[in-house]
Image 1 (cartoon, rainbow, N blue to C red):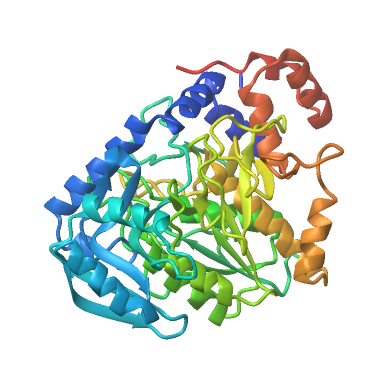
Image 2 (cartoon, one colour):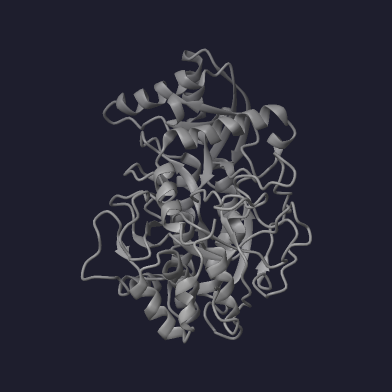
Length: 478
């Protein structure tokens, strides 16, 4: 029996989240750190690019074929390097020693970096040589400031649906009716840039959640490119992130920038461009729920140069990643950003969140409820779709939304961050997960209570919401 129909939001949520969600969450936690799962996605993407050469030119994606190095240790754009422009002569000589040469050069004079197209480049050989160059720096000499163009990817954990949903994508689609709150004042006068991808190509929502959203200037391509009628792996990610920000700051303005394609893959060069454009457009906060891991500490000349040029009045919030490792995720690990890890709903760190001294805050990453994208297999479906998802991709925008609310209340950037630190759970920050924040909203709390059916918790929820006792008989689902 579902909840009383006097509570339609909670009725829909209960029907959309079977009690087997607990085992589902456990399975997703395991797969998030499973290299084989993530490597399979990268290989699928490679095959997709080969079959659809024209899609590889999607400006939101890498723009070229990708190379998978050392079993997935690093994924890079084929035949591409990024270097500090002043060091191009040194880089050219270094490449000659590898039997490669520069065939094209694109300079970004704003920050002094260049993207090089390189002929005859053996990616494995170049990768090994780059790592060695970091060890061979002579005293008094600058290191060779060059890197491969790392492929960026989103930080959401795939939720395979419990029941068949042809257009479900990575999230677990639910039926929910909830309008955007009006006149809260939270985030008023503040612009947040959401640098992401997978935005809804046909923004037909009627519930107000996108009324204050400015879509990407380069459009929103379709999200079912691999198999018509089935969402691509990165579909809906940016729309979900946008909804999380607005739930915490309903009066904020969100500008969307497309840094990855519908598969959830992009490049560090593209991310750099989006970041600089967002700041030029007047964003006070930038949310980046994507990036790439840097196991060799090679860094990224493009991202680092861009982040160093951003004024201190602009806050950059980035997700820490979902590999359950201390390997730094860029840009989250950069000193100019606020890196955000993930917590369970009980505020313990989630096992698959990346961690380390570079993580500044952690917020609830599972479960998170937010706006989603329409089912391409069902054009007549609800125009106001919602879903439940997990990942540090979605803990980061909780922090972004809270900072937007603090800025909207008149605080400076430094004051907003300092205030957020006072909201920490427990007496001290964690050395690996930073300041632990309780930023769950009503939907997240309800999702947790319904998904993990401890009788006491459900009874307390029933009393608080005045739900009839038959709530205890919600079916487990298929």
